Image 1 (tube, one colour):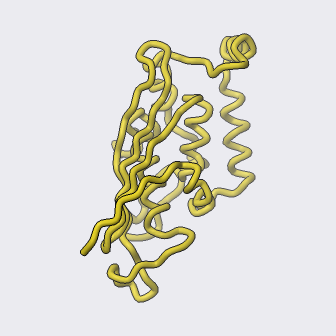
Image 2 (image 1 turned 90 degrees about the vertical axis):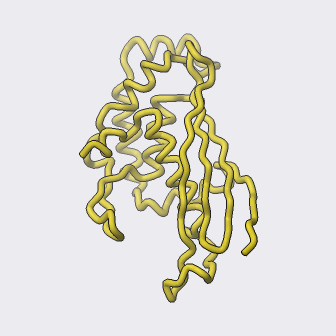
Length: 185
């Protein structure tokens, strides 16, 4: 059994966005709703600092990310042992981070072996009081084949690696509070 290690950037895996089944109409609705949430003060600051992202205090960012999301932005898991669990689709997580934590960055380390893909996902958010703050989590996805055995690898869209990257992003975002309330149910 050999271990292959590689590093991927978010840009290299962005094509997997569609796998969470979010329609363009749903994304437009999320953008419109998030845009309405901007206060008059934020709009004035945005105009004054249009050439650079507005840095906010970490506590303010976390407070915004901890707010419950509208039910229409959530999905229900329909497979496996966690059937019926509520989750936030990956594109929605990215959109919320774009609006609530502008300038966020990520670092993804991918390890692929015969069992699946493991991802260490580090999410970094710039703040006015602590500089860049990083929180991390992992994602794992088992290789699956048409026969359902994990030993044979399947590659292509929706394979183990992009799924693990999406899972890592969602879990790292929870470390900043996004969707954390879903785990308290």
